[in-house]
Image (cartoon, rainbow, N blue to C red):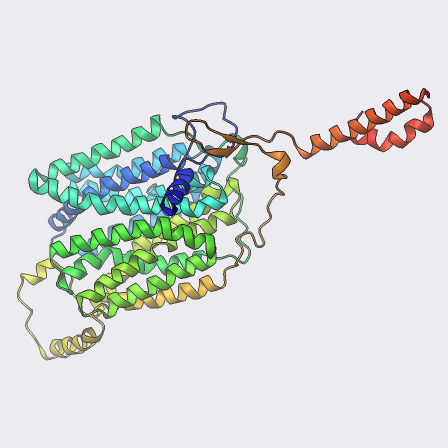
Length: 516
């Protein structure tokens, strides 16, 4: 019974609809719903996941001596541009709608894919510049906020993050298999075709989610956060996470002596657990703990997993860290839900744009930070170094190596241990966020639900959603006052008395209210 109930809840979220009136100019198929956002995210990152192995090959071929350095520079430029542009794109989507910017962001994010085979140098140049528009998540989360209620939003964001994880669990293995079976060119053109399919899906089938009447007149409106400041927690928690993603698999291979099969199994297990955490577990935590406690819950697990990666000396500790990493994946969707709860309906784009911009900055700084710390402690993550001879051991070099080896014997992964310290700081920042997401936020008074809205049930799928108000409070007051006037007139007629000024004067206030 519980399984059926959970499936029904998730199904209601996916197909949930708000009762916004249809715009005069309508495009797409049906009403906007969560499944449109899920499919967009899945196709985009599935295409990039297929290219995991070709990207490594192109990096090694183009920059054979400084692979990680140039990769860090490229990701740093891309992340900085995303940080600067994401809030602007989110704000513009609040004014002009979500669909044009979904098409723009997905198009620019996937534009470098065909250049990978045509010209590697143009590929890396386009990859860096594409950071200006590679902010699909900010528009997607704003789209989700448009089509879900506030109670459903955290679970919906969890489904988006779980879809992202699911796309990256399956696609690297499929890409590697096709590359071994056929060729690298086939994988690249397949990924490009999937990206084109994603753009066609947006252009033809995805409907606009933001009605005209909810769009502000300009995009210069500011968000009033008052005491709520989740952005510090986002930066401090996602900076080590981005660095971890850039180096963890190479770290497992070269430092922890994982085989390729063990690394693939590790990716699959963590991916599946992350999907479960971001759907079922996140929904339960949001229901019983609320926004703030769920964020802190995820940050605690992130501290544990980074500590395990930093101090692990055996394989079972790494697997434990992977389990903790799956649980910590609930932090980002819960923070996004918290930010969305503080923003009004016409500010969802700029709110999620700020979040995505900070993540973009971390995607650029995180790999550079981890690479620098690995360099400081003389941890070489270049696979080519395994085939080369060791440099001559001078006296200074030998003493330096002895000092670093003594540290590595206790802390094999110094960047992960440092990342755990950053997340502890993020946890302290989260502790000072308000309990109630509506604390200090000026909201418009809601209409009485009993008189203002009607629940309409769709016969085909049995879903309920709100539609337009049947009657407003002003209309109710006007009708009631008219009823009092009619009742008074009827009583006068029954007694056979004629209207006099003294009879009309008591109704003077009512007549003014009803504009009669």
